[in-house]
Amino acid sequence: MIQENRPKRRAPDTLGITKPRARSAAEIREIFERFRAVEPEPKGELEHVNAFTLLVAVVLSAQATDAGVNKATRKLFELADTPEKMLALGEERVRELIKTIGLFRTKAKNVIALCEKLIAEFGSQVPANREALETLPGVGRKTANVVLNMAFGEITHAVDTHVFRVANRLRIAPGQNVLQVELGLEKAVPREFGRHAHHWLILHGRYTCKALRPECGRCLLVDLCDSADKRVA
Image (cartoon, rainbow, N blue to C red; front, side, top):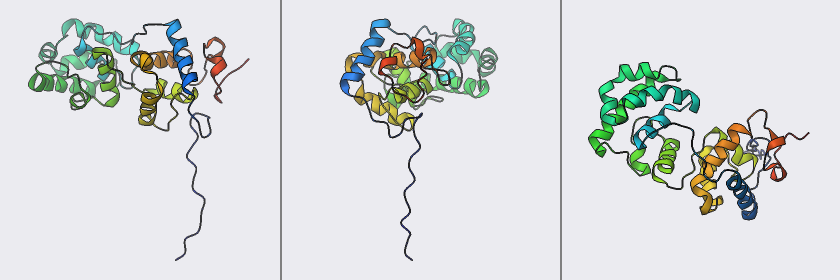
């Protein structure tokens, strides 16, 4: 049977940009120099007191807001700031303390399970490498990236919905999925900006380059942006 020569289906456009091309190295440097000038030391907004509470907070933040997680974890971390203390609380008590967070039942189960694993296999210490982190219950690539960056100072690029959107809109690292964007950021972001890059992108996406109504009128990058989503007066 002779197959018809049918045209291949084109991949869907990414956030309004057809066949996006990455920016030049000079343009990307300019973007991050502007971020740094405004906020030299950006901070993540999840409250924590050590590497363990950071890990727990990031696990709890899946499909939840940082503000919502912080509201729940203030009391939780007062009671338990080590794996042993968390395990002593027990799953039922943890579940009660985090019940305002989405998926709280599954998350409470994961928190207790990761505490057991930390104690049994890692001497109660949060491991400082990706492979070990990703063996912990509830920990995926993005969570591991956040912990490695914030707790251990590694250059990683945790791609959440904000980073994905901004990296595509600004053509810093165009990609159809989070892994493509992460790998693109690894190549595109100059090393001197690497440790803070994902914080700048998250904060920019959360407060300025919003999904539905980007506030382009107050954007420090408006003259560099050519996104189809750009809102000009």
